Length: 422
Image (cartoon, rainbow, N blue to C red; front, top):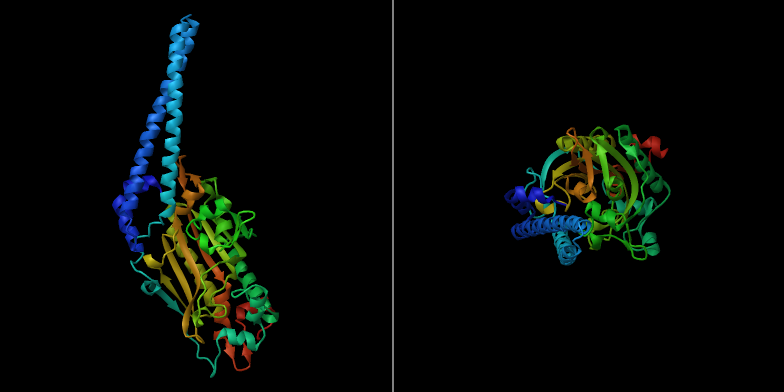
C-alpha cells in the first residue's frame, strides 16, 4: 500500500509513474490527498475538543472543592455536549479513515523509474539471454506427449480425480519432481536462505498483507467455512511471518526459502500454450524471500537474479530475462524480472520465475518496520522470487533433453534422482 505522506510530497511523480501501468490516477490521487486533509482536520478538531473537555473536567473538580457546586454543574452540562460532539467526530474520523484505506487498497505500487511503459507482455524488455538452443531429434515431442509415452505424468487421471490443471506425477516423473524440489532448496540454503516449512492456507489478513487481496481474490481458492485461502505462492505465508513486526537494523537482511504447492483459479483457455504443464491450477514451487534495508534492496534484487541464473546454468537450459513493462507488472511490484526457459519442442519461451522488489508497498500493509540507526521506526523493503517454479522447468527438461532412446537427466540432478535417464 502506498504511503500517504509519499503521495502528498510526490503527487506528480506518482501520477507519472502509475501512467506506466496505463492508469490515469490523477483523480484517485487527488481524492487520496483530499480525504487525508479532511481526516487530519477532523483529527485536529477532535484533539482540541478532547483537550477542552479535559481542561473543563479539571476546572469542575476545582469548583467543587471550592464549594461552587452551581458553577460546577453548569460546566458539567457543557462537558456533556462536548462528549456528544466528540463521539460524532470520532465516527466521522473513522469513516474518513476507512474511505481513505479503501482507496489506497485499490492503488497499485508505483513502478520503478527503469520500468518501461507498455501494455502487454509483448512490450517487456529482454535484458539478458544465455544458453544454446539444442538441436532435437527428428520427430521430437512436446512434454505432454513425452509424459504419456514414458508414463511419468497422467493428465487424464488428474482430470478424473479433480479436474483440468491437476496432474498426477508417476514413477520417475514423481521422483524427478521431488529431485527438483530438493535441488532448489539445497541451492537456496547454500546461498544463505533459511528454510521454512509454511502453511498452505492463510487467513484474510495475510492475503491483504502481501496484496493478493483484494486485487486477486477471484484467482484464489477460498475455503468459505473457515474464511481461509489456499496459497497462490509461498510468498504469502512467508512474507506474513513478519507481519506486525518491529526489527532491529542489525537483523537485516533476512532471507528465507520454502517449498509449497501453489493453487490458482486462473481463467481457463485452450491451445498449445496452456497444454500439459504450461498452465496448472495446482503446481509446486520453491520460493526465496528477502526483508531488506531500503538502501540496499536493489542490490539484493540483483543478487536474487544472479542466484536464479546460477541454477539455470547448472540445469543447462537456454533462458532469457525480461524486465516487465508497466502494463505487465504485478499489482504489488515496483520492478520485476521474469525468467523464461526456451522450449525447443514447442518453439516458444516459458516463464519459470519472477523476481520482484516491492519496496515498502507490502511492508506498509504488513506494518513491517525496523528501528534505524537514529532510533526511528522505518518501513523495510520486501522482495521475492521463484527459485524455481517446477512445472515449466520440468517441461523444459523433458523437451530439451529428449533423445531417441529416452530423456536424459541433467547431470546436476542425477545425485537427487538416482537415475540418469527416463
